[in-house]
Image (cartoon, rainbow, N blue to C red):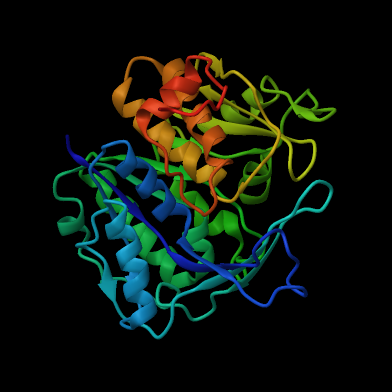
Length: 345
């Protein structure tokens, strides 16, 4: 099987243990993760050959991030070195009625200072069948946006399938350019587009039409058909538009589902009730990793691909850290209806 390539920033995550607030903690748990690196880890766990491409500082912390990817079976041969620091984010994990909080410390990170021409995309894409990026990367800096555009153009010319998770992050778009100006030429190259109603609105001014998205604590899947149609009209290369459906009953209890629109049919997944969330960070990334796997393994069965993605990301909410550390058989067990959580002996 040909490889999948992902491109983006991996960061150092520092989080107080045991649901403590920042003002209470005297120590931080250390995790390495980021949108595209999390997708790469998921795919490696599913047995898909995958390379993660980024720029790391040539110091001990950069080496630790590299080792985390290697430990998970992700290819790192096309990572480049340079810059002075790895980006950091601080996570205060919420519980019940108190939401989680993220504080970024990623200005002037190695990838924020990346420039066009630093990565040989022809070399990176040798033997590749799929390229994935997220809206986080072009939000980091103009340089990161320029390199991301280099990548999607190169992948498009080579006939590689391109996917994106729009991932709007209001705390990142700070370098003076409107997101739509940057994102439109990037998404124009994409075959698969993942995004929720906020992503569609903040990036492209697209809103659900004629229906209410939220129905109490649940999310209407049908409401997103109009969003998917508008996305595919704006980006005619796209073959599928997908969104996750998260109903937030509390920080500890979410409902979780997804829909996929192929231009004709709107597929809807089962809905899971995740009643004791361990860590919801990386939930969307785990969905994307599951979706890519599903679309590769079940190319003629969008319903099964969607169901795999939703089940995989449901399981991620039980795992501490950014990445989804589950195997295919665990996902398929949940897809088959076994949510018992019984000990496997």
